[in-house]
Amino acid sequence: MRKLHLLVAMFAFIAAPALAQPRPVWIDDLTWVEVRAAIADGKTTAIIFVGSSEQNGPHMAIGKHNFIARYCAEQIAGKLGDALVYPVIPFAITGDAAAKSAHMRFPGSVTLPPDVFAGVVRAVAQSALAAGFRLVALMGDHGGGQEEMARVAQALDAQSKRSGGRVLHVGDLYSKADAQFDELMARRGITSKELHAGIPDTSAILFLGADAWIRKDQIAAANESNGVQGSPALATAELGKLYLDMKVDNAVNQIRAFRANPR
Image 1 (cartoon, rainbow, N blue to C red):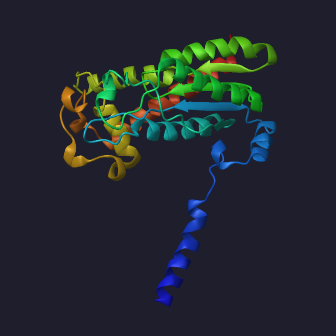
Image 2 (cartoon, rainbow, N blue to C red):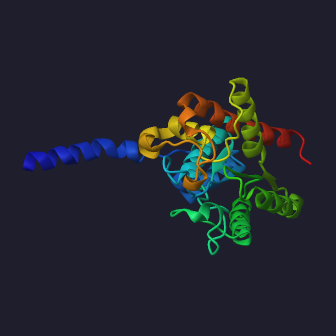
Image 3 (cartoon, rainbow, N blue to C red):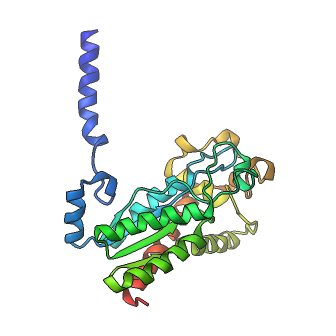
């Protein structure tokens, strides 16, 4: 028994550094002193990424958008080279809780009223500006809330511009990637609309971590009653990588274009 305890302790000691490895783009992994130093050293862009907790059919975990958000945010920050990432906001506008509309028909989904959602995004963006970031980039992986983020960015940008801060809604990440993926599918002979939990969503999660987040035995064809609008059976990890690359590249390009020609 004593040997067993020693082995457990040894493996815990070996594993601990790997588990505790900080990822330097994530504000959650830094101290306030390190955040201040990073900003002083030129990391003056803050990424605020909205995910969503919502049903994704019987085959895919509710945290799909949040998993995608974490991956994309880290990739975008890495490509920009001068950005830090705030914790992913895990809730968005997914329907009406009282009326049980849209995704709220399904257990596990979470929704925020539009004014509450906008208030949360605004408060986090204001916190980033107060910290000293010069550009705050708002983006989201869910359709509900895109308009609210755009309005928050426009209002805060007008206010903060006088003091040298800027706020940008990075809408290309969401809208352009979906259009590009539709074009890619059309070239492959698939013309069905993949609206929710279909090929692109399922492919992205297959790429990111199928074993944990995909129930392969539950993948079903499009079925409004089970929350799927698309053809998840046609999803592949290869398509998922392409789809995520589209999101990342569109965001990076929009941010760089804004920097080059700020309005």
